Amino acid sequence: MPEHLTMHPPLPDTKWSAGSIRITSRTVRAEEISVRLGMVPDEQFEQGSLMSPRNPSSARRETSVWIRRSGLGSDSRLEEHLTALVRLVDGCREELKRLSVDCDLELYLGFGSENGQGGCVLPADLLAEVGGLGLDVVLDLYPPSPEVDVVGG
Image 1 (cartoon, rainbow, N blue to C red):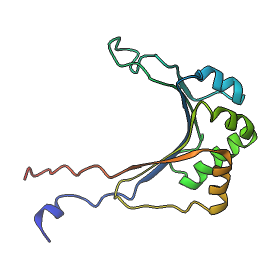
Image 2 (image 1 turned 45 degrees about the vertical axis):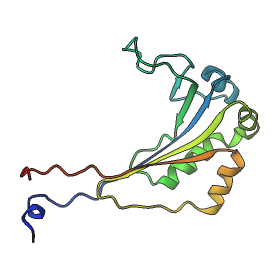
Image 3 (image 1 turned 180 degrees about the vertical axis):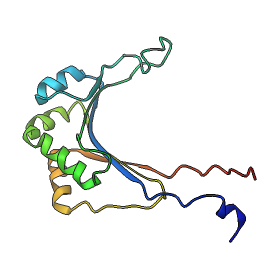
């Protein structure tokens, strides 16, 4: 076995996933999105606000942003995050359709794995529900971090 392989323990099989609904708009304020959907976001930012509030010279947001997370832990499966988000907005179908005229509606799913392996099954009926809500699906995949060579070469 090559020496550089014996210097590092095997990578753990640590996986994580996350999910949120992200609504952005150049014309509808984040505060208005909350009122129209009848729910409070986990995060919201208004168009023109500073990207980094502690840095007055930072860039300003080009759109208003409204974010609601699934509420599940990172150890939940991607399918579980998706199901929770669909259930969260299922009663808002008509308002989501109205918002889609002036807003981008995204179901944002993130996945990472320390060993670079992983996958999931998103059932067809669940994907049909997402389509019925008018949400675009964004998959944000995080590859494993590069190993640091402790030997220096």
